[in-house]
Length: 273
Image (tube, rainbow, N blue to C red; front, side, top):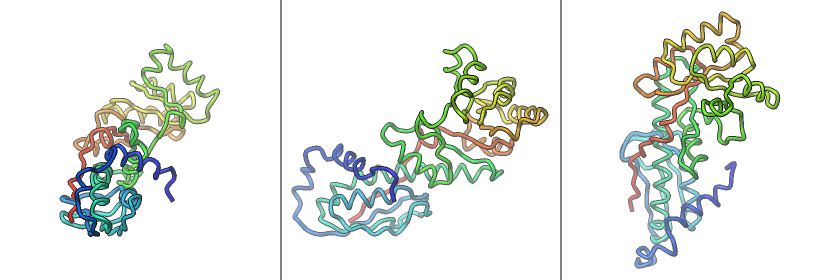
């Protein structure tokens, strides 16, 4: 079962595209057709269940041939759709927009996950998502083999540089967080603050823009003070497909990468009648 009101959101997506009506498709004769959605390139498919729901909202019959998480090659069929021509064409762009974006995120995520040598290290998404699409973006990350991390600001305290700049004291912020919450994350820019955060009970320490060597040294410092097992260590900032394997061999628990959702390249897919 879908865990949110997908029908309402997908109807909003359709309304955004259709406006008062698809005036071009209204010129077509009323006839039933069969169409298929195919991939033009290698990809990990994501968003199929939502595409099915979009077409079903207009009374079409949908058969899924490639489930979410499946690998596809060029010219492979993902979905077959049967229904009135006008209704299928009215849904075409909304369905493809969501499917190509989600599949792009899943494919990029999967590619990065495969480059991480230590399988104990997990790839996490960030909140760098398209407004209105976070649920879909984060789900695509999960389909690709990554983790969602925070969906909303109310899920967990994450103390970052701007919070510290306003407060003026990392320690006071940590103490405030510890009084109210059992779990909290702290972003740090040097090893000394990482040690401080660990000593004060941080659940996760985000090492922001640390090099792989700096991360290794910081983890060794945590081990010497018997703090390593008390916290999860996250690497973030400047991590890409070119260097993720180096970060993935440092011993961190988490690697967070914003580009998998904020700089996604959609997969080339098309609907053919």
